[in-house]
Length: 137
Image (cartoon, rainbow, N blue to C red; front, side, top):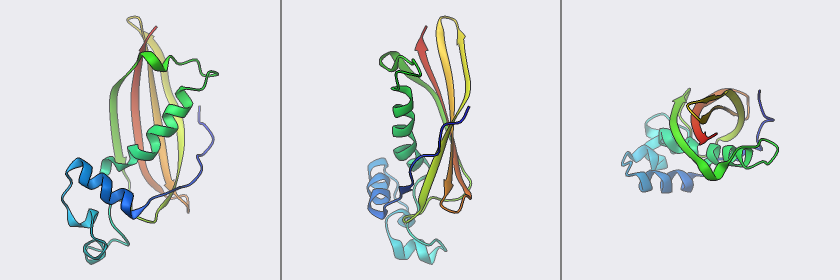
């Protein structure tokens, strides 16, 4: 099952800089546009984990929807993966589609795997994220 595409998310240069500094990423391509361009990028480069800044709020919105019936208050994050198809840059306009990959019950817990496909405004793949979420049955 796939949800409707998200509204476009405009990746801000300052958001990338702030995120890079917050996680201790010291690469100049993440904070200095001239260094990024000298390295062949159109703008500053987001650290790979930056995708969670705009995909996790979408996931939270989906999980808190009463129609889905997920007990968000009892949830724990079981696993997370991010595959970049190309770097995320300042100025990118990205659209995310959430896919429900698996929903099962084992050992008294509900396990939900969500996959987010992130594409640029031209429809080219940018990133794929997966999250395994667990809640008591």
